[in-house]
Length: 203
View: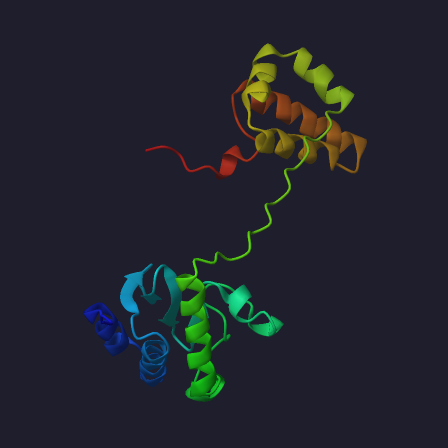
């Protein structure tokens, strides 16, 4: 038996006037395509679950959004609709921005069938790890002359080290490079990361 969440009723009631008929229509479509669906709120937005997360909708200031969690599998033949999360149909400003009722119900049925079968979405490609930047000889030499700066740099994360190396090596003029190198050694000796000026002071 499908369950309805009163929080979604409240969400729709508080939405902009243009959004109310869209949200009500989408809610009806989901229940028609999956009678056993369970309603819930996640990230302060209405979601619909059936043996796992299935789809969700949201209302914004000037548009609504509706998306399937396994969009890549549901829209495998429609590349324009493969956006996962809350954007399978782009900005929805009226009911005319949505496919017809039969098509939408078909999508919901497919989403439910995927969850029923326990099929997981294709794995996301993991971002490649960035290789450590090579240390210029003049930077290494400067660090070797200052124990505090050398220790700070050695204890920094790869990203913090990269920030300093990039800042120094990107200098176009020799004079600028020397100025930056001097500041780098000074700041490192004080235990400061490259962007220390932008770090909020601790209260």
